[in-house]
Image (tube, rainbow, N blue to C red; front, top):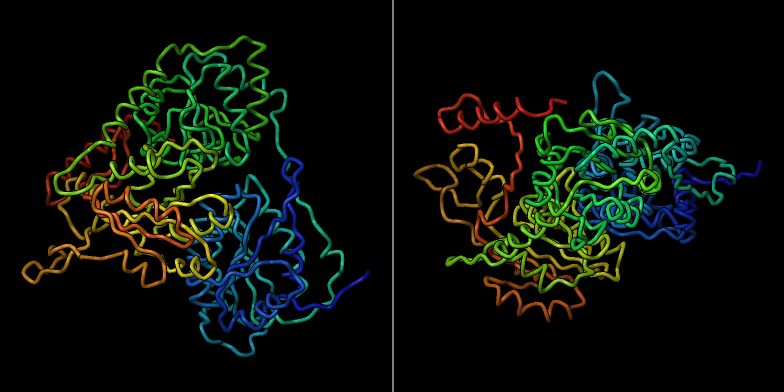
Length: 620
């Protein structure tokens, strides 16, 4: 057996550089590069291997461990999971800073490879700087915190363990069903240990996307269920987009006159002006999608996790409605007590189209979904034309941006607060894969970093970040990474002086306003009840070296865009909007754990309403 002597880190880099994915005949280099911050636990091991020029992996220097991991997730998400980036850090705080991002990747089913340094495998310099000691099990380190948020986890205690660990890592990272965060922990000493690795381990390895079709019996059962439905309604999830099933979905809906609603991950699979596309479904959904869903006699979930926002906490449909799901992930397919069908979205839709055409099937819809779509268009006109004497309404700003200013092929990114809700409802995407929302974890701070990843994935497209002041303050330091790398993104910061989305929720449950706005502390109340903080985010961007703009009116906003579009660097527009001017409602309900006993009668009444509603919906 031919071997080559390498350190474990050198072997890891060489292996990653030779991984490829074959998606429908197109061969793609799977690992684009590595993003990292070098500390003592990683710089002399993996850092030494990455410095060597014998590989083609691009290295990007991060500024916060969580942020750099969000960049990697944004890249993989925009690439529709066909390429990834790895992220690496030192031990202790560096590693633990990435745990939140690992949870974000796994919740969203996005592949990211985490390579945190670990304490010494030989335990000689013990405890080392930044090591967490466990008094009852010395094998437990800070990196064990990655276990519950990873789809695969391993620790390389000996250099030869790298081989089985990385084969399993690739198994998960390239899986359409079980992907997410993969964590490979790298003890500091083992990173530099040498081993005679088989040359075969480093040969070009191609991982094939193997589409799963419905078997004959399953196809027959599913077609029978659909053929009995008069008013079916489809939920288009992220799995439809990742499967490239947009054309198949359009053909299916057109052939049988079936409308669909989108999840956050599924949005921009088909254009908003598609006659069967009723927009977002559920808590953050449109009036058109929610009304048609309530009247449906069959819900067809395709490639969706069916989370509580998508299903309005299981209240979006009739209590007795029948549900079927098409999914490559068995766990997702079984949700909501649905009849599960395990298959790739594209193949399943193609098979169903052929089978139902044989049966001459057609839904019983007449003008219902067209009427609902027309009614929603009028509501959008109203939302976009709201005028306030004392400032800008958030819905008006989004209307001006989406209709008049932002290029149709641009990518819009959001993640937390009210903006994902508003964007799913009102941002009409008519370009494929133009909507990029992280809304499985709704991780504050994803926005700027995720947008940088999206721009790395598709540098030819403009990228616009829709972020609130709360989300921006949570994590924006990768803005410096974008400037360092010459990456242009456009940050539209809608400043409403606080966590106003949660402020709305707080007050909707009868709780007085408390600690959700950015106000000064007052001495007479000893609470945050003073004036709002006068933060100038445009000047903050300028301090970093970006271009900063301010807009307090629609006219000012419009006047900025010619310069914004000519700019070759990162831009931030600080748009001051009024609190409470986001969109909400539209016949959707969200279950929250409101206090059943309170000194405020309004709170107890809100809790009673939740209990009453909860008794009327599906329980599993």
